Each structure stands twice: as C-alpha cells, then as structure tokens.
Image (cartoon, rainbow, N blue to C red; front, side, top):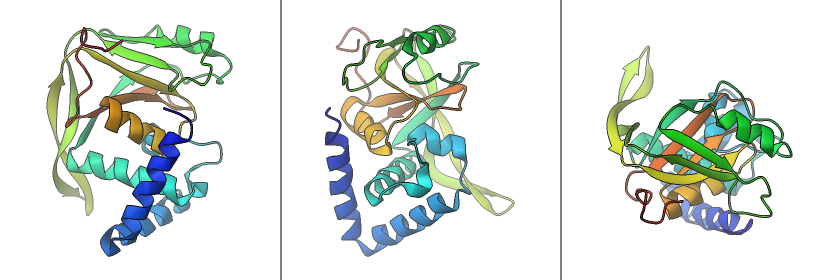
Length: 211
C-alpha cells in the first residue's frame, strides 16, 4: 500500500457518494458533526487521526470516516478494545512504543517495526487464540432519545492484522479493513488499542499467511 493508494481509494469513494443524493446528504451531515467536534473523540481517533484534527479533514477523509462508521453501525465491521495502560509516545520513539505494547493482555502480542521505512503499517497485532469482538446487528435501541447499536459477540480465530500507531488517516484504516480484513489502531492520547475486524472478509487464520 503506497501513501497515495488509500487516498486515491477515498477519492473514488467520495465521487460515488456525491452521485447519490442520499449518500451526499449523509456525508454533509458527517462533515458538520466532525467540524462541531461534539463527537466522541476517542471513537473518532480509533478510526482515524491527523495532526490538525477531524474538523480540518478534507472531503475524501470525511467520506472514509463515514464509510467506517456506517460499516460499524451496520455490523459489517466489528471491534474490541484492548487496554494498554499507556498512550503511545511520538512516532520517532518506536522502541518505547514497542515496550509499552509488550504489556498487552494474553492472547494479544504486538510487534513494532522500529525501522518503518515507508512500510504499509507500523507493525502487526497478533492473537494466538480465538477472541471475541462486538458487532452491531444493524438495529438500534434508544436511551434518553439517543440511538445506540444493539451488539452481539462474534468469535474470531487466531490471526494477525496491521498495527497503526498515532496519526493515521481514516482512508488508511478503511483500506486495511477492505484488503486485509482488519487493523489495530492505537491513536495518540489513548490507552486503548482498538482492533477492527471486517466480518465479511476475515483476516487470514494464523498459519495461513498471517504474520
């Protein structure tokens, strides 16, 4: 994955959204919410994070964010949070980040690419035994007038996915999900690694290509 590949994908997604009146309206509402900064900052960062924040995201990144959010609400994507007890250090301090990720609970294990010379990701997150993620059933319940998705648990066999630490565009998160079946996000300011899984295209089981 080149640095421009995920942006090109997001630009194509944006074009498709703008051809649909309903999708274009949804995108406009999403951009207004991102600009208002009234959204759950941790949730947004788990999907994508940039230096200047979501209020300044260009249209194609807002489109990628909306696609990710819609996929989670419809149950196409699932997720689970993994406590790290620390937030990541700067991108230059990769050895410190690797040390902090060494404290992940069983069965998770992370490897950080300390060189990361224009690699497609910052490392890999692996789990050696089946885990459970939560995904939406595609319906919601209302609490004090606000909708929340109805969730169910799904077991995922041992595998590995790309790890993205700190700043990473929503389009990169989306491309990992679509191409590799999952991605782990550890954004700046968060002590949680969020594992995102594409339940329609699961990552390869351990021993079948997962590193």
